[in-house]
Amino acid sequence: MNEFWTQLKQFCSRLFRTSKHGMETLAETLDRQAAIQRLAAQARALSRERNQLVVTIGKKVYALHRRGKVKNRDVLADCKRIDEIRDQIESLKAQIEEIRRKAAGDLGEAELEDDSLLAEEEVVEVEAEARAAEAVAEPPPEPEAAPPESPPAEIPAEEAAPPSAEAAAEPDESEASEQTSGAPSGG
Image (cartoon, rainbow, N blue to C red; front, side, top):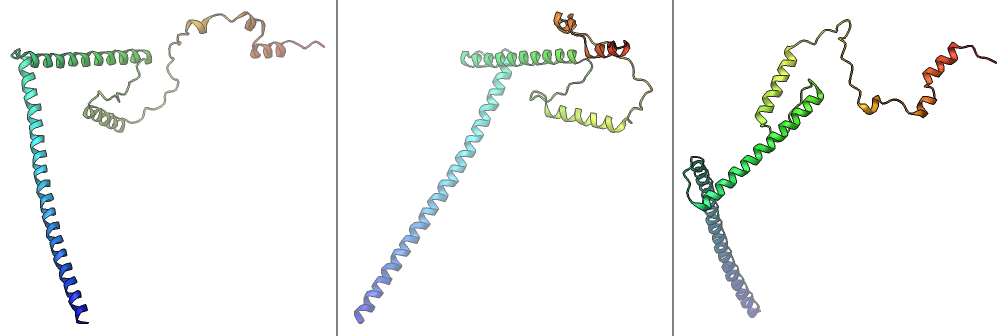
């Protein structure tokens, strides 16, 4: 039995040493991972700072290009491409405005709401607030005795065309009822 206790003691001793070594290894691994994460976070922060500086430098170079002070061919080509893109954007905006003007002309005096992505959010919000304030401030109009007469609507050419021969041969239902009601029926 003495031998059993000796083996149990040795087993527990080995188990303790192994677990102690495992815990030390785990602690070292966790320390290494924490150090790696700290260094990676510092590297990401420096990368963000570098990218911000590149953007700032780009803005300064483009500002110098606008003054005619950029002579480097590579940089000059990029600046000219930015100018082309700006011109294309302006052209597209002009086309959008032309379409809106045509639509406004087709609709008459009706006001069009601008919900496009090109409109700045602040401007749209300010206009909406102004309209809401006007709607609250103005009392509803009182109904008039007779509505003003509107000018006759223009009839497109295809709707104003004379009826076809078949339509002329068949009397309209209202005309048919007038004919039968006004004339005595023979029978």
